[in-house]
Length: 477
Image 1 (cartoon, one colour):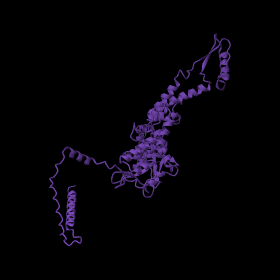
Image 2 (image 1 turned 90 degrees about the vertical axis):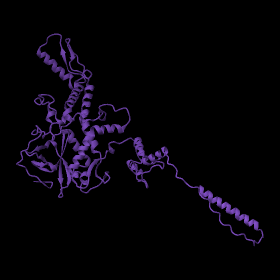
Image 3 (image 1 turned 45 degrees about the vertical axis):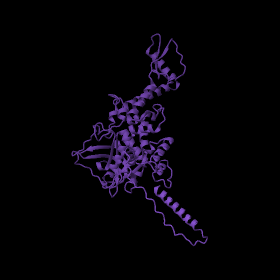
Image 4 (image 1 turned 180 degrees about the vertical axis):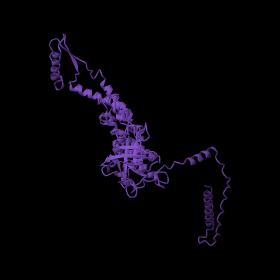
């Protein structure tokens, strides 16, 4: 059979072994049976907790949707490292289209959201690759983890056993796909390197406890906030009389009739035997359940409303904490899986990679953002146009140059100047400038028309002396 241009055949010679000890269960090889029984014997009493029940807990639903939506909203870029080691965003006809639109029925945001949701709920994400005639990946499909199994052959080769899925283009009931055609992203692998474990495994009992508390609270308020009790009589009564009183009480003072006034005769008394919300510390128990679930998902409790937010106003620091302790590992694993799955790491001579732009996640408040950008421009780290780009402003003419103040000098020049101050160099010997020779005086004109020879001679002599002094001052200045 051909699947997306790849010839797939059933490997009859392969004797696969399923890594998970529950691989043959109806859960498709996942780790769900760990949480199916909150206590021993719960399955026989139909008290097992299924994934749909666990996700009904508000804290579990909030953690899963918060993490998946926060990662999905980040822009996904194709990057290339240049000769200077700087990663630059590029566009490639071979890889960019599949990153913008992974498949025919999902955009990028919904694709990443389903990827992360499958990983958080089931501990594993399986993505089937579709290739064209060139062997390039042109589409990716997130498979149903309950219908996918990891199998290992006797020689150590890894295959994936898939079941029919019309949405992903899988028509046959069962066949094996080689590891090269599946992107497998796992959560923490506690038991086997090919089987991720969902965080719900650790918080299932806390979620089950919270759901039980909420169910009991619902029943309590349905009964008019009055717990169950007993009716006592001062004397012995027959079983028939007791059954008649019980039937009368349930039909008239329970369910929709709860809260009505009851009149008892024969000195009978009604005594509550249930535990009210105050005695059972209902709010404290629900708060503990929510905080336990948040600790398992590494989500700060205030982000899902489980506790009040911190008093200090520093949005960037709070987002940085949330990113480092919860999202960073998931994002980096997703980037690495995409790089290897699309074949970006196998291109010789060029370094490609994918990157989630964290600016939409680690967004600062307006005052901090302006101060950060301004400091970067003033410190000659950013050009004015790079700073304006961070603020979503158009570039300006001449803004692509790094500016520094004129008095700023390099460290090398500053060190040299300091050394000159400590050990000033001796000035070189210089000779006194020679006085310029006086220009030759013109011969006196004895035939002056006025006949005043002494005045002409005095004027010429004074002019020559003045010019000599001027040349001397110019030479010594």
